[in-house]
Length: 233
Image (tube, rainbow, N blue to C red; front, top):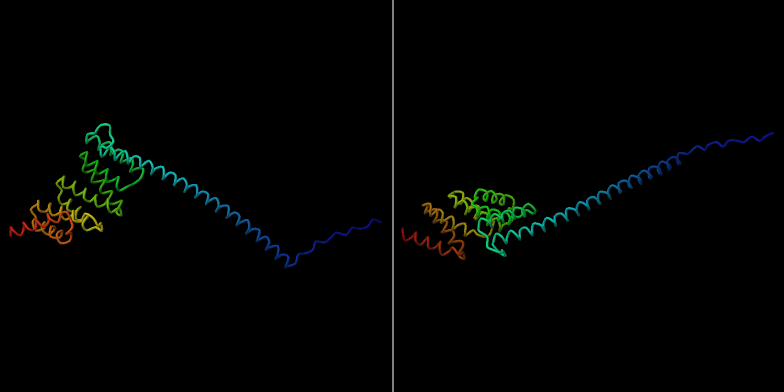
């Protein structure tokens, strides 16, 4: 008679075994999640490195381009290293075009000041004033150039006959935290007020200059103005 083969009954898992299996499954899941997170983070780092590298190369390229354009513009503006001296209109126009290209490649307060100077040289005072206004707004921390921008603004406004606007620019220069050209602001304000018949206001500017800026190249002029005032009295 054939032997009956007994089927093995499946052993039921105990609570402890189920708990271990669940933990192992949880650990595997966490490992997969961490691997996925690590892959995403690595990919993000690679992308950032590539972007940073591109920006660095692009910036260096644009900076180098700007430097070359500026150099060529300076040579033309100052009529240096030219085969033949350029007429003012030509040198201002050509240098202006190059300065604008340089500014588009790399923003610079100094270049913007030259743009304004070239525009003024081409008898375009309103364009020059617009460039100077942009300079004041965009580069408030570039003190040396900012001071020159205020001075240039005053010069152009005086040429246009806008004495009030010129005085406003000079007053902004004097009241700013820019440490230079304050004596220039005072002497120019004094001269402008004096020419406009405002002798008392002019004298106040000359007096302030004489009291606060004894080492100024305008000191003797201010003293002379005040001396003349006393004689008249």
